[in-house]
Length: 134
Image (cartoon, rainbow, N blue to C red):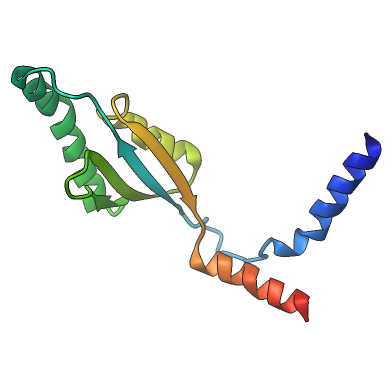
């Protein structure tokens, strides 16, 4: 057991050079998350669909429009698909969760959230790999 733990620790330590040492200003940069909401209920009747649109979909769109005006998100709806796709800028996973849970559509759609790495962050990692290979 200790040998396995030692091997794991050795491997982790050997990859420590992969972590970019990027210094930022005192203010933390917001992270970006790719968000996709899909699915939702199929309409049972025109009256039920009208109620759903009025009470859930349109208020969610209003909220998303406001978030886009504030620069908090950018995105839209894939043409012909029952889905939402957007990028959220947030300071934490909790902030993303809170934003999604505030949408009236939250409990209706299936959500997939993918944290995005910055181009700058990945470039720093790749540069270190190049330097380490010399």
